[in-house]
Length: 187
Image 1 (cartoon, rainbow, N blue to C red):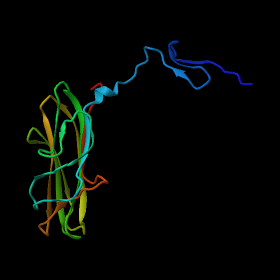
Image 2 (image 1 turned 90 degrees about the vertical axis):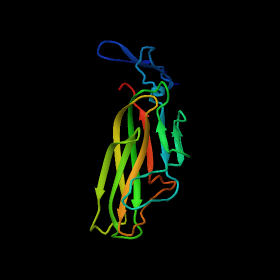
Image 3 (image 1 turned 180 degrees about the vertical axis):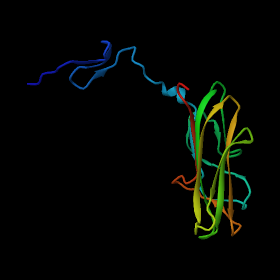
Image 4 (image 1 turned 60 degrees about the horizontal axis):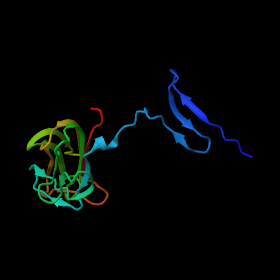
């Protein structure tokens, strides 16, 4: 014989936070503050699916060609390789990117910049120096919290210098080079 016991959990002020009926069902009061994940849209995560050859020491747009997530169809993964804020989706956004660059062989990798561009201009730029370090590849990472309005667009550029003159952006299903972001709740 089992006995079901109803439990109520309250805060210090006597407000009900949840009720359990003893059989695994939990009920939240109608005034319980639940975050609305729909407010976190748009959100996107894209990556470079294959290697992209680039010129040494020249800023080049990373062509993120594969989408994992694109809730509002706001990322162009075939022409401009950019995220554009949709109408009605103004707000603060958390934006991030990582770009794996490499040289042809060890000791050739000199430095890598990774920059997030907003509306065609550098918003944030990260540089990693690797000269004299026997390095063949590196990951440039950067992130930002940005105020964005409808029509603003974001792109990622990288600049890789190597002594071979033939650097590349690494890509593949393990997402060595990716770009993403989301609109923040309550910000």
